Image (cartoon, rainbow, N blue to C red; front, side, top):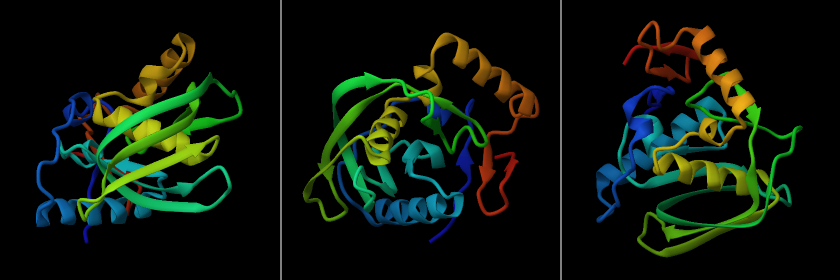
Length: 188
């Protein structure tokens, strides 16, 4: 297993829709193992394939559900169903490993259900209502659609987020990824 560089906002991989996984190969298994290793090194709640520069439609998660139970898994070719009210809780800050060091209140539906397949090709369903997992499921599927949580911010918060990104100077210096082992941004 390898810790891979995590792409930063502005990287093309984060702006494109992903491709359906047609066959679970050793390359897919290695990608998933590397994603878990990378997510663990970055202390993340989840990681989508585009965040490590891959175009495959899959993500991993490692976070608590609404009952505080730590949940960990992979969903390949996910289909998302959101339910419950769309909520914007000012005290619930959402962050993203592709926008390291920043976090903003982000409107999300209270509940989420994702169906897809696991690494054995078996149908799976992952669901949560009101927990970090519900938020993570929605967040990771957004990545697979070429969208970041920044796209869901209110106009004022989006402006604040873009100002913070500019202040970090990533784009100006051509920085497109960071290594979670060193917690420093670097060029790809």
